[in-house]
Structure formats: structure tokens, C-alpha cells
Amino acid sequence: MYADCSSKPAPYLIFGPPGTGKTQTLVRAIKEISKNPNCHILACAPSNSATDHLCEKILEGGVGADKLFRLYPLSFPVRNIPQSLLMNCNLNPRGNALEIPSKTKLMGYQIMVTTLQTGGRLVTGGIPSGHYSYIFVDEAGQASEPECLIPISGLLRTETCQVVLAGDPKQLGPIVNSKIAEKQGLGVSMLERLMRDISLYQKHERYGFNPHFVTKLRINYRSHPPILKIPNELFYDGELRTCMRPESNSYTTWEGLLRKDFPMIFHGVAGTKQRESGSPSLYNMAEVNVLMEYLKLLIKHLRKTSVGSIQPREIGIIAPYRKQVGTVEAFQGKEFNVILLSTVRRNPKLTEYNENINLGFLSNEKRFNVALTRARALLIVVGDPRLLETHYMWSK
Image (cartoon, rainbow, N blue to C red):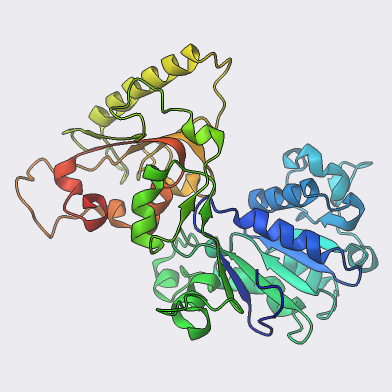
């Protein structure tokens, strides 16, 4: 982040492509700012899981536990509170129930961590607009703009408070179930709108982003280089560089690879897309069978390499349809050593190029980007190449 200047009253943006450490960047900034005892920090995220993750990382970063408080909504299930946060939240251990502390107590903590929506409790609780010196929003690309505005509109004093939004407008945005709401722009986050429409946040042809307003993170710590190559070229101007961790090389010895330095496989399948009556979701049993064979090979490989037990984040299986397996939306923000991607769709009458072919979800750039960038060490894509090559992303 640009250290010597402030973008006030405009928000400062941290543009974080996949695997570049958006949350870690925020945590480092929060840690440095908290060294000034006169600064008060509000750190938010759209969901409780993302907020818990942010809170845990701040504590792991060496910030004193007495400085930090995690405010949960009263409706949050107590059983879902992480063990690491039990002593730093609004849980009353005597009654094993959540309660909202007094205004005085809330203002006594230097770092307040809560969801965007629960940030409204701080406003209704009487926290004055000049109290917080910084408002950080992690995963800002996934929050709707009205949701993002809940804490900002009630707690921001533009003369004294800096808003920092961290996220990636190239990944999945807010989930909007209403077509009317989506048509009116509620499917676009504040982060994406600022970068799309406001000149301050747009990239200059020669000089890049203005460091007074935007920092673009460029080092990817997640993926083996070939896995990152296509998303990097399509969505990030080829500016990302890889800095692999040991696990990114963990499948270069797998016997299923044709090239040991290229941990990617596309497996062509001419299956049949199917749909159960009364359900819009599709599935493709031919692709399921191929995925099962790859799973067997991968498990065999892991046993050979003396892996005692296979952890939940070892292998992820993604499809654009819930009926097939986990959807792309469920995988955003997560990473796995191996990703198996089933594309499901197939046009049995496809014999030549047809620009009117409907790829449905597969033609969505953000879903494509998220699906391909979850893998650290191995990416296997299963689908019908004759259909997929009709779209520029899949063709590339």
C-alpha cells in the first residue's frame, strides 16, 4: 500500500488477483496501524466465515488479543464460533449466549471485527462517526454496494477516516437472486464499480495504476506456473508472477502426467448432458465416470507417497451445476492441491462451428477465472472440446 499519501476522502483499493494474499496484506496493514494507540480500526467482510478468517489472521499476525473484539450478530449459532475466537467475542460464557456490549466497552477496543451487516449494530449502538480512523473491507468484490455502505455510511468521517477495500473484480461478485435487482446494478460491487467507472482507479496505458489510489498485488503464492498462465493472460494483463510454495510441486511426480513440468490435463469426453424432471440443473454421467477414475489414481498416488490421511483441501471437484458436484460459487476464496473440473455441457449435434451455441454458465468470465485458479499443484478439466472451443476463453 502507498505509505506516504492518503486517498482520503476517496477509498483506497487493494486489487488482489487469485492467490496474491489480499487478506495477508490487510492484516499487515492493520498490524502496523495498530501500533498507534490513537488509531481505531474497523475490519469487515461480507460473510461470517470470511470475517472469522480475517479475525483469526489478525490475531495470528501478532496483534495483542486485548486490542481486538469480534462482534457477532445475536442470531449467530454459538456452536459455530471458532475456538480461537471464544475469548475475543461477544459471547457471555455464563449463559452461553451472545449479547451486544455497551457503547463504552465497544469503543474501548482498538480493532473491531464484524460483518458488513452487523456493522449496522455499531451505528445504532451510538458509535460516533469520528471514532474509527480506518475502515477495512476484505472480500469487497463479493459484497453488494448497499451492503458495503452499511458501516461506511454510518461510521465514516471523511476528514479523519480512510476506507480501504480489498478484493478482485475479476472474480465472482455479489450473489443476487432477483433479476430486477441485478438489472439495476446490484450485482456489481462497489470495488468493481469504482474500478470500472471512476478514472482515479483505472489503469493508465503507460504508468499503470495510480499508487495514491490503487495497489495491484502481482505475486501469486498459490499455483504452479502453467495453471496460472491462461487466467493471467486473459484477466490480469500478464502481470502476475508465481512464487510457488512446496505444495505447488507436489504432483510433478504423479504418473498420470504426460509432462512432469506441466501439471494440467484436458480430458475430452463425448458424454450426454442430462436433467431430471422438475430440475434445471444438469449432469453428465460420462464425465462423472472419468472423474471417478482420476480420483482413484490420485488416491493411489497419495498412498504411495505415504500420506496418512487425505485432508479436505487436498482435492476439490467443481462443476457449473449443483446437480453434478460443488458449484464454482462454493469454491471462491478456497484453494486445493488438486482441482477436477467437470464442464458438463455437451451438444450431441455439434459438427461444425456455430456462434449461436449457448454455453450457459461456462461462458461466464468470472466463473471461468475462479474455477481455474483454485488449484495449487494439479488441474484436470473434463469436457467436450468441440463445444468448448467455440468460446474464446476455452479455446485459448
